[in-house]
Image 1 (cartoon, rainbow, N blue to C red):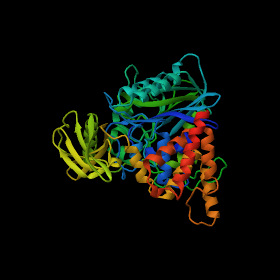
Image 2 (cartoon, rainbow, N blue to C red):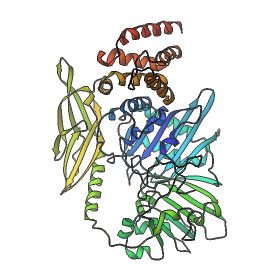
Image 3 (cartoon, rainbow, N blue to C red):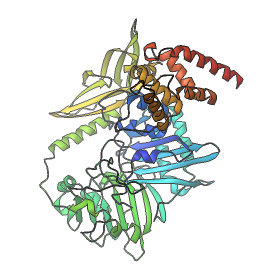
Image 4 (cartoon, one colour):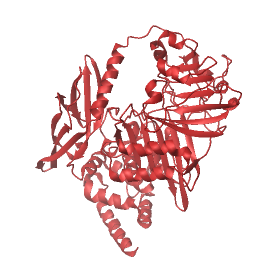
Length: 596
């Protein structure tokens, strides 16, 4: 446990067990990067990623496939502004902004349900310290898979059930059907027995910041604390009752900002500046593509009791060593208990400073440096607090038809909010995510009109930017979208699928259920045909077979394709003769439906 060469990738932990497919996933995160949120759908749709960045067509199909299966809850005001608005429309139904009543919404979990024919569902819980962002920091992940289910709810699951029930009640304008699905998943999770990881004799869960749930008790005789953010009061709370000097691993800038006496009697470390930890896959071979990690973001508490009881407690999750992180923020942790020689402090951090075991290769003794000028950081944190206050206000994006021309309708979007923005020293402006250049300064209650929007640019995503001096912070607020035309998402698809190769790739992905092996075979067959390039057409070996298989299975892929081909896509993006071919496919589909 907690060995730096045993690394995992989130996408790997999201893949369904063999023979199963994912039916529903609920994720929580403090900050959310919308482009990072596009990657989990690849695991949900079981589509392989062959390069560092997926191509837009594969990404489009992954998002369409996963849209009704994923719910992501994040702190309102902590959604980063993406560089591009492409395909964000397919994320909108999945993302829910949480407005907590006390501290921050800071938990980081994934709860998943997998299904298969003629088999009971399986479940998985990921307890993380990382947000759903692209940060390459040192984090922790605990994966628990279901062992079985009980007839009655199990007490162990009460904290997790409480969190899942709390989520829809504190999110802005979430669809009622999604609330029903989340409640169904919650009811099932209450009965799950979890497999224990190796060396773990008992496990339990802790939720902080919800009514009826006590603050975390970390009383012990000996402590190892790993936390990127530390406050003096939080450190005192965590190490209360110690009879041996506690050990703390944190960030250099965090420790430098603490009063010197806060670290008196604490054995303190930071990440080593030249960390270079090799990683290996299951076969022992090196993994050269594993990204280098920089900075600490893991939160771990290792506790050993004062008596001779031989068990150690290890708590892992989202709580920083701060008063809010231990009392008022909404946080989630998993606690595991096992023998000290397997889970204890000396196992994770060997006493020998020259040891290469456990976390020793990652750390070096802390040497205090003069603290940085924190004025800029204080301003940034103040702007971020204001953004969270603004995001807690209900925003409305109202759409009306503006013009109707030869190329179709254009629309007008009016952005407004339920109340005035809070008064601060900062100046505020807003813009539609898809029309960033058209922004408006806000004084009091926002009211901004954006003209001449094609359907593909209609969006509920509002960029809110606060500026104080030369410091700027921004976030995306998801408003309630009213009056949007039904074909808005079709228009986004048509914008992406703008040539024949892209259409044929989308067709293959939709009919092959995202099988990367079938896609590779199709491309190889086409290259071997001497036609050059990587494009596909209906004569390519395997494409016709996929269409026939889709017809015989009666699945939704053919129906979905029929809508795109007949209602959405222009003739210019279809291979020559494809409409005639598809007319025969549609006729065959209707005959098969009559016979079923």
